[in-house]
Image 1 (spheres, rainbow, N blue to C red):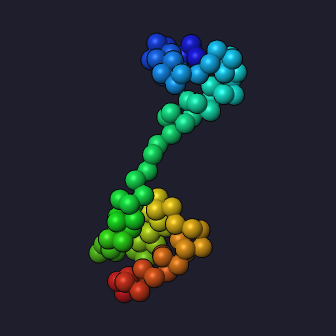
Image 2: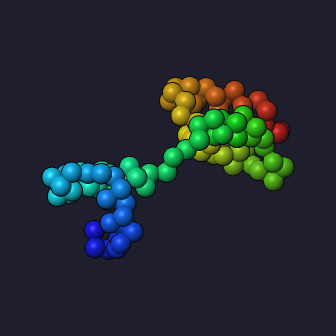
Length: 94
């Protein structure tokens, strides 16, 4: 807690934890992880995925890697992720 300084204390006090919870290390760690966790825009991620095209300088492996890294941001069901990527493969440049 000391390493975070006054800004860390501001975050801690803004979460309105009781005194008992503030004294519990695990509760405070979970609270900070939730506070600083990066939120993803699923709709934007899916739009980017659906608009991905293979660039002339991309190898097939590069394009497939970009597809799989982008589909992770879409929060599809895991079996659906593979299907979504496979449907995009016919659009690859040969």
